[in-house]
Length: 569
Image (cartoon, rainbow, N blue to C red):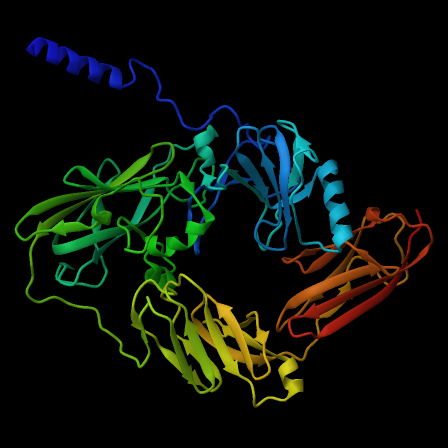
C-alpha cells in the first residue's frame, strides 16, 4: 500500500510540471506581431514607467531624433479608430486584428494615402482639425507589414519617436514585450535611494516615525546592503530605481519589484498589464509628497489601503512588514527589467521597541478634511468644494485668501477626483467680467488659464490641482502673422502656406482658416505656434486668392488676419 501511494505521488508530481526542455506556454502570441519600424529597435520609454499621474501605456521607440520613418502595421486587421489632437497622442491610429488585440501607433507625422484621404474627407466635412473617427471594419483594411504612416513628433512637446501599444478586447493595455518584441538589454536596474516608512501608530524605524532615508553600501557583485536598522511595528520600504537598456542613456522604468522577508516573497509589483482607469492610483504607489517636493520618484514595496491597482500578483498583508521586539529579520528588495537583469538591496533589521520616538508634526487649521465626506469651505468670497473621496486620507487643509491670491493647500497631497473652486465676481462690471478668467500660479510666479465657467455672479473651475489661484484680466488680442509667405506673393511652386499665432495671457482657444471664403484644414503645431495648410488640398482655378485666419483666445479676444496670394494650377 505504501509503495502504491508513493508511486501515485511521484506520478502526480512528475506530470504536474513541464518535462525536459519543454517551454512553458505563454498566454500571449509571441510570433504574431512584427516590429512596427524597419530601423534598429531602441527604446526611450518602457511599459509601466512611473510618469506624472499615470503609468506609461506602451513602449517608445527611438527614431534617431528624426521624423519620417515608415511605420508598419504589426499584423493584418483594419483601422478601427483615428484620433487627431494637438496634445496627448497627437496623430494616432488604432488597428484591430483578427486575434482580438488592437495595436496603437502614436505621435505620427502623417498617414498613408488611403488613410490620409479618408481622414481629410471627414475633417473637411466637419470643418475640424482635431477629430476622432471610428471606421467600420470594411472601410480601411490593413495588411501585415503595410506602411500605415510616417513617424513624427505630434502631440504637445514630444520629440520624434513612435509610441506603440497592444491592447486586449477589454481595452486593457499589455506590455508589448510579452509578444516577442526583442530589445537589447544587458544592463541591470540601478537603485539610487532607500527609504523606510512607519505604517502604524506605534511603529518606528531607528526611533523615528516620519519617512527616513537609510544608508547602504555596494557589494562586490554590484548589489547593495543597507546599514542595520532598529525597528518596531508595521513598517515598509521604498526605493528610487531606474533601468537602462543597451544603446541608450534614457532612465527607464523597471519591469518588476519584489520584497522578501527572511527569504519568503511577501510583495510583488509587475508591469504586465494596466488600464487607463487605474492610472491615477500611481500616486499611491509612489511617495507622492516626496515627488512633489523633490521631484524624486520613490516606488513603494507595499500598498496603501485605497490602492486598487491590479499590478500586484503577490501582496501578503499589503506588503506591510510586522517587526516584533527582540527578533531579527533580513529584508531583500529585488528590482528587475524585462530581460531578468536584477539588482538587490538587503536590509538587516533588529526588532527593538523604543520608548521615546520622534513623530511628525501636525499642522492644525480650521479646515479639517475628512476624505470620506463631502466638504465645502468659504472665505472672503472664495469657495472650495470637495466631493467624497477627493483625497485618499484625512488632513488639515491650508486654505487662505490674501491680496486676491487664493491658496488651496500646497501641491504635496494626491487627489483622486476634481474639486470645485468658485470666485464671487459680483463686484465686477459686465465688461470687466468678459475679460476675466481663473488662473493658476506656479511656484515661479507664472500663471496659466484654468477652464473657467462663467455664471452671473460667480466664476468657477473644476481642477485636480492644489496650489495658488487668482482672477486675471486679459485685454490683449492674439498675435497673428504671415510666416513663409508675404502679402500679394505668387505661390505657384510652394507646397505649404504657414501662419504664426500666439497669445501671452489666457491662451488660444480656437482658430479658423479660410481661402476665398471656404474653410481650410490648418494643422497647429503647439511647439512652434505655426498653422500649416497644404496647398495641394485645393485645386486653384483662378489666380488671385484671399486668405483669412481668425484666432480667438480663452476670454474671447479675437484677431483676424487678411492677406492675398496668387496661385493657379
